[in-house]
Each structure stands twice: as structure tokens, then as C-alpha cells.
Image 1 (cartoon, rainbow, N blue to C red):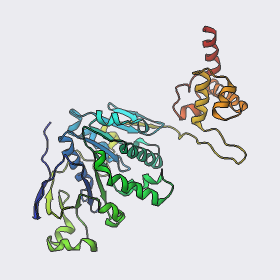
Image 2 (image 1 turned 90 degrees about the vertical axis):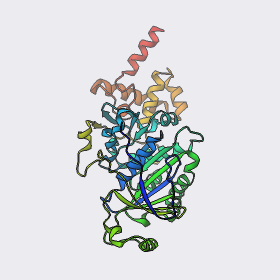
Image 3 (image 1 turned 60 degrees about the horizontal axis):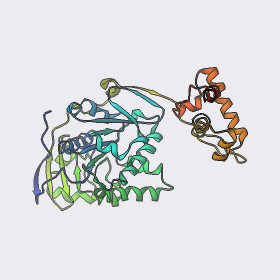
Image 4 (image 1 turned 60 degrees about the vertical axis):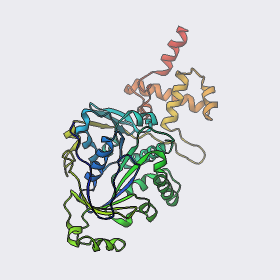
Length: 372
């Protein structure tokens, strides 16, 4: 595979060598269409070329990060797609349910992609994304860096809200991950349209601030000092392949990078282009508190069926283990078999992808007992 060149920078103040063997945090700021995502992808290419892992976690709703599947890297890199629960994906690439990902999988793949079209909805995607970033906390040692791509940094914050008690905790968790990133072997690439959309505590943690075209409004007040070095018209209308770079150490330069030819085009049906077929199931039903009682969730229903068939527990034993009544357990076992006889599957088991969704539990259990 032909490897494209690294980022080129003409330094106008100080001089700095950019290393793609360091867990840097990159913050890219620019208008829509200014080349923010393509720059994040090029940084990713440079990490890949050094033997590190790319984790394209927060994609756009149109599946922009699926374009990796037509990049030159499909020929010699190990690629893993992540999907949400109850989403079936038909393609030639390895696909895994997002909440099943392990640290071992991080080391055994080169490009891991979590595309938005492979989730039932935005809530499911953000919840899984929060679980995946929590997984990165557990990296206390590593052989390779992980470069995490976050397209629109605000999505990072919204995903933390899915697993946090309030906004303050969500923000503090996001700041903590970025602050501790280098200790986890994690490099992060964030992009945003607005400078102030990202908290100052997060902006201050960036090793590199990359400015793309800023449009008619120009630079915000905190960055207007850059006009001492760059023509305002350059800042306003930079072509996508150019950028201004400000390093944490104070170095300042004008850079360029080769546009990834495989990047997703606006309006393109990327699923069709790549040849991926996606089928969406139903979201699993959660338990509801009715005041005097709590309903059975789909996951709990599937666990009742598993305990009854796989562990051969009695209804009374299952009731004691799950803190439910024996009558409730009995009704769910009867309801499961009735659904399988009527439709060929149990809807609750199907929603949580239980292996027993098509099994007549009482009948099959009786056969096992008879054989014993």
C-alpha cells in the first residue's frame, strides 16, 4: 500500500516536530465543509502508518466514518465494525456488538469503527459510546496507542450524559478522560464548529489547536491575536487542505495535508457504496415501576428462560434467585412457549437476541430430563 506523506507545516513562530508516536489531543475548529473530518482522518492515517490503532467512535449520522472501508487500509489492516443491540449487519467485514468489545479486541485490530447507521437510534449510539470510552479507562498498559476520532466534540459530552447523573458530572468525566488520556495510551482528535461549544477546561488540554476556514465571522476574540501573523482573508477562506496550527508550547504555523480521496462525499449513500445491508430490530423493553409492582424487562424474561432450560432450575428456585413470585416465573415460561407455538419465536427473547427465542422450553426440557 502506498503511504501518504505526513502533515506538512511551515512554522512562522518557533519550530516543532510533530510525532505520531505520542498520545496527543488534537482540537480542530472550522466551518462546515472546511475539511475538519478529512483532517482527522489524515491524522488517523499517520497514526496507522506508525503501527497504532484508530478508533473512529463518534461518527456523523450519515455514516461518514464507514468510508474507511474503501480506503487503501482495507488491504492490510484488521478492521472491526461495532453495532448496536438488535441491529443485523450483512457485510464482508467483522462485526461485533458494541457492548461486547474488550481491551483484547483493541490490541487485535487496527481500525475500529462505530458508525451511527449501525445503531437503532442516537440514544443507543451515545449510550454505547459512553461504555466504550469507559473501557479505555482500564488501559493501564498497552503495546500501541489508540487514536480516537470524535467528529463533533459536543457528541462526546452528550454521550457522557447517558451514563451520568447530571450535566456537571458528565462534563467532569469528559475532562477527566482527556486529562488522563496519555496515561491510557490514548490520543484524541476532536472537531467543532464553534470554539466556545467546548468547555475551556477541555480546550486548555489540547496539545494542538488546528484552525480551518472560519468564514465571514472570522476568529473569536480569544484568537484574534493570530491576525498578527495571518491575513484575515486567509483565515476566512482557507481551502480544505490548509490549516493554521497552534501548539501547546506556543509554536505557530501554516500547514497542509493531502485530502483523503476515499472520504465520504456530501449526500452520498455510503451504505450502498460500501455494500452493507442493515436491518433494525426492536429495542428491548425495560422494566417499568407501576407503584405496587415492577414489570419484567426483556432481559429478565430471557434470564428466566435460560435458568429454567439451561440450569434446569425449578420455578420456585428461579423466583428466589430473581426475587420474583413463582406465579410470575410460571406465566413467563408459559407465555414464552405460547409465543413460539403461535409465531415461531418469542418477541421478548428476540429483542434481546436470546439463543432460546425459537425454542419450546417446556418440551425441550422434558426431553432432556427423559434422556437423563
